[in-house]
Amino acid sequence: MGALQEDILEYKKQLGKGAIQKAYRGLMEYILSLRTHFNKAHPELAPSGIYTGYMDMTYFALLPTSLKERGLKIAIVFLHETFRFEVWLSGYNKGIQSKYWKFFKESGWSRYRLVTPEKGIDSILESILVQNPDFSDTVALTKQIEKGTLKFIRDVEEKLAV
Image 1 (cartoon, rainbow, N blue to C red):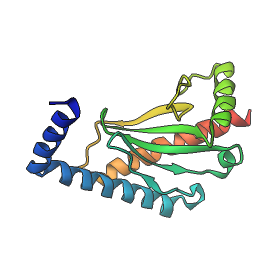
Image 2 (cartoon, rainbow, N blue to C red; image 1 turned 45 degrees about the horizontal axis):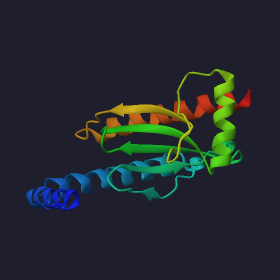
Image 3 (cartoon, rainbow, N blue to C red; image 1 turned 180 degrees about the vertical axis):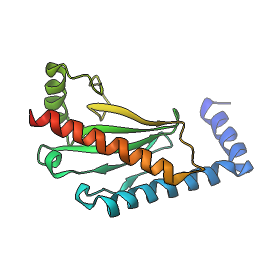
Image 4 (cartoon, one colour; image 1 turned 30 degrees about the vertical axis):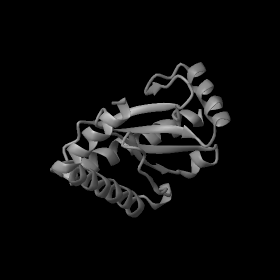
């Protein structure tokens, strides 16, 4: 039996238990509510739609005017495998990403992790917002994500203003 077939059988077995569907639905509902929170509390950040991914990552972008003018955006990302929320600085395209990657690399700024450009990498800077989030208190979780994201945006904006 091929590896894909074995994986499919395991997937079917796990789906038969029902927990994966409930957890995934709950996670997607939470991320939608998080996006709605940002839209209501910070409409100036113009949240994008949600990218659900392939159970690898789920995210939505924030587009602060100061960064959007430079072709940059912020992404609030849930990484399924490592089970954490991160915030990323990204460019609208590879050229912009390269330009700002060089800017941060040459500046020596180390407040956030500078991501080495590679095929399939869509971020310039990354920061962990919440490792192993507790979904039993979504209000506190949202506040933690919001606080970390707003700080990340301010720090990036301040660095780019230099």
